Length: 228
Image (cartoon, rainbow, N blue to C red; front, top):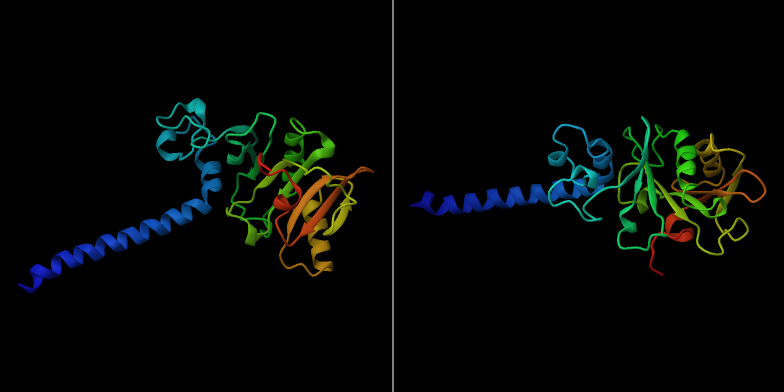
């Protein structure tokens, strides 16, 4: 008789454990969504594409994936990087721009030693296709202010009035985009910044201005959303 009453309890605990495990898996999936898109959604010809990709491209014609928020939009890609639409563009006017550039290799974020300098020139070239040079903002958030664990550079416009003279954070200049990480790291060490986000913008004189901030440069200095 004891086993008769214990069996439903055992089943209940088993279901509960499975639910907890599923919740944890979902949490991991959320923080790895961009990595998932890079690995499973950039190649529409990949076998089992619609089954494996959670945010397929529209041209793949996957069932139940035809809205902006349920799909990904790839703007350009090479063997190293992919440029895509950020989900923040969904429901916004056509003139609003918010893109992302990601490495195809696994790179956690701004703190990852495997980050590559080449991502900056690729990102800048993509941004120039839709944003005036003096308005371009390339931003990477600090580890504590990001939701994704795959390095991604935000391609956005600067907020009105933001320029090299209006910045309150640490700034440093570079003449080209081939040493952004190196220059930023040296500046962070000099100013004792253990964690920081990074903004890259054009310098009116020549070259580029790098802005290091403990907060999110995307939130502080860019038009990250199409609403006020």
